Image (spheres, rainbow, N blue to C red):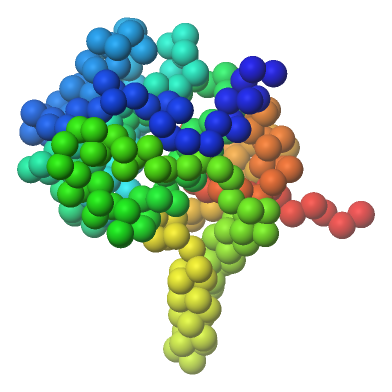
Length: 273
Ligand SMILES: [Zn+2]
């Protein structure tokens, strides 16, 4: 029961204290940046086994950069460190090369270590963060914070409440629709292309910038960005996903991400009986 209530916590600051924020990272590259933030979490006794954590975060980073564009990166690892969730934030004035899709240097690094026993936790957090970080006004305020407490206060405004049900449904299904259009575009004749592009643009306008950026990155890399969940397995990589998460996807239509292949997950359409 305790674990379930964790998902209902509604503020980013429930997971973040000022002591977990580094206002001026010394790091010059992404490995150093991740290590510097990890050191803070170690010092605060929020995590232990730095070597394992660093390896896991870097491995995940090599799979696909967690720089979500617009100068922000969300490196993360799913490791049982005893706690539920540990977050550290680092700001880099000069910026760090994170192999971001938009080639922009990263000025804000949010490191997330979460416990695999709480399915859906990362997705819940990611959705909340993405919602705020996709707004340029909010990002500009973060980047122009004058000091650590200023930065912490702005980060504390992030709410992790789930989007309204109608919005939830449209987001996941819109991503799936967008994928179908992108696939059609590959074989489309010239006269069809104009319409397909128009439809795709309409969907793109409705979705958060961060979601669309991530979608495009996955399509460029794998040809697909959205995978259905069928029989408890991600159809993108055929790996079983956590039972709890599978059930959560079935029940809602929120944006979930496969913890193995990184694709967006949607519930498979129920077959008509
Ligand atoms: Zn997968």
